[in-house]
Image (tube, rainbow over the protein chains, first blue to last red):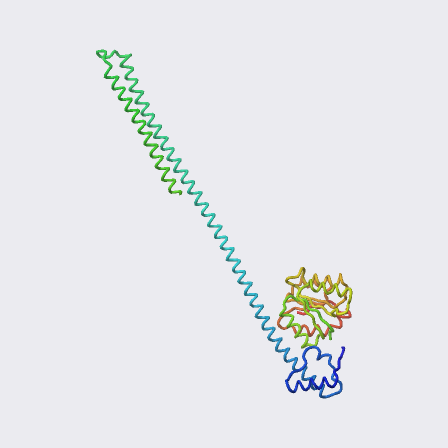
Length: 201
Length: 143
């Protein structure tokens, strides 16, 4: 191990400073400093080494304590970050579930709307079909009766004027009724579509 | 007593702990501490050209945050690329056997587990140091 020596004047100053101000050399220089044969230099060196050791022990204890606290803080920080991450994941999953539920609700709403409209169209179709059949049936029947009165059976007294007027009136009423039915259906359809549109909007 | 030690550890608080522990145990005369593998590699590149100032022993932390590679890779580079023949090993809070085997495979001579009570392990290391220096000791783990 390399050793260094100080001149007597330096030793004297070191010893004086130690006695007056309690300031000693510190650190690894103490490990290479050679006091020689002088008991006073040796005493100074022993005191300096002891003081240095005490300070280092104190500092080591404090540093270890700070290191432990630092580790605990880092651990706590890690746990908080983990919790935060889990919360963010849960929030993201909840948001995803909400979007899926909204999508399902929208799909169900669309299906319901479609079914309602289809039912309405089918109902309207049936009404129109039946109404037209009735109108056509009545028209056909009265026309057949009028034709019979005109061409097959000789009219009583040859007068078909009353029958013709009756047929004409009947046909007018049927046409009026058929248009009335169609108008009513169109009105109902329009009103239903308007209500459905405001609900969706 | 070891003439000079280089500590490579990203935890600056551990620099103080290690320095004080080494001083109290009379392990080393001088100690230099740096915080990254890249800085250590640069130093060893220089020492490869001019070995003056090269440390006698190197302690490397396993996980070096902020470095391009971990401590085991640094040990491999120092041993393989720069061939400095220093006493070198890992000092880590981990005692993972896989990592220990990796370190041994790249030429680390010892593995010291870091904990609150590191002084007894460093003392054992100090007593065995000469065998590490003359390469008569095998790989040693201080748990």
